[in-house]
Length: 193
Image (tube, rainbow, N blue to C red; front, top):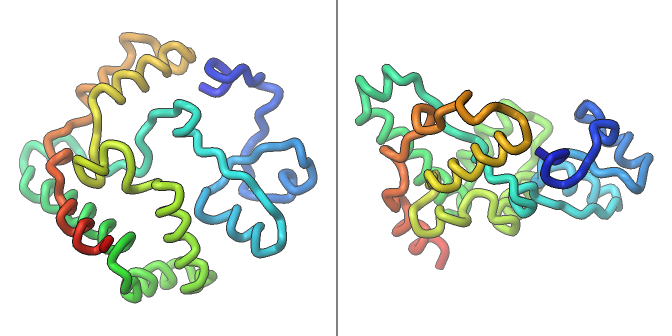
């Protein structure tokens, strides 16, 4: 996509190895990173970085999707709805609720290198960059999906040569059945005061 849309060449791409050393060694380089992590860690070491979200450059893919098998969706839609609603409400509480002790404890259990300070900084960065609660989510709720956006993304991928026009039918892969219902908007309004 970057090659097709922004004129990059294949020679400019290097395999991402999760190390910051190559980035630090070459001031003209750009590196993939988690916007809520590496820039904060580097900043703590006195390294100033700029963050450029691919979404701001036209990359319209959704990230961090909730996936389920088709048979589960068909046989137990009520469970799917409850899971998605609870996920949205959980995100509102995490972003705007204030008391994150329980969430932090679970995160640190699997990531012992994390501290409350690091997690507070990451939440602030999530809010600053509007990575969870932005775009359609502002009016339709966290987890919002737009069929038009998916259509544009599919067109971009065909144009970039990632797949052919008839290779993927996005309508069979994604459903709006469980989203765009405004779940949690009232909670955000209450918590964000």
